[in-house]
Length: 159
Picture 1 (tube, helix red, strand yellow):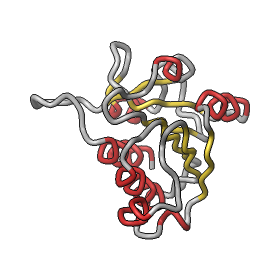
Picture 2 (spheres, rainbow, N blue to C red):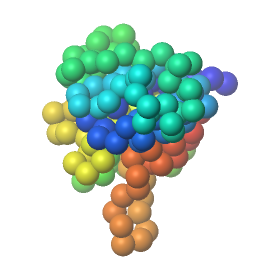
Picture 3 (cartoon, rainbow, N blue to C red):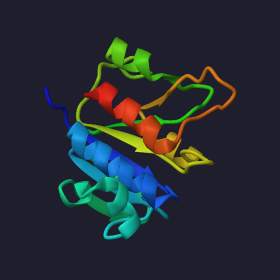
Picture 4 (cartoon, rainbow, N blue to C red):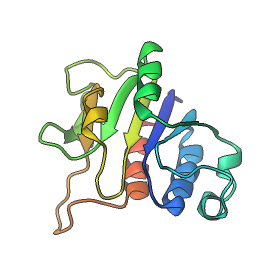
């Protein structure tokens, strides 16, 4: 069953990561990609190279300020979920297995998954607006995955 899933990219530096997220979003049936801040947007050769044309098939919109975008989505009843490691984030598998948010609710679609800057992550001002914050547990010495890889793991868990 297809769910209404949106994606918000904020300050993603690598256009190749942006293209990869477009390709994965299109494959997962994401409804729309919101591109915010300093994230590059189509048309760009670097995006097309990894998106393989997916940027032409999926709806997208650019917002300078991610806060404006999030507030609009919340007014439309969209659950806001950030993918970020914090002291309050929960394992993404428990989030989807429980079928609820970290605040004890049931999964609410439509849902917007936020991913942020490759090094700095999702900003605190954005995290404060989120209904839930989820993370991918790391077992090795490295504490995070490439943003497009992490996005792919989580967005498919939602579908």
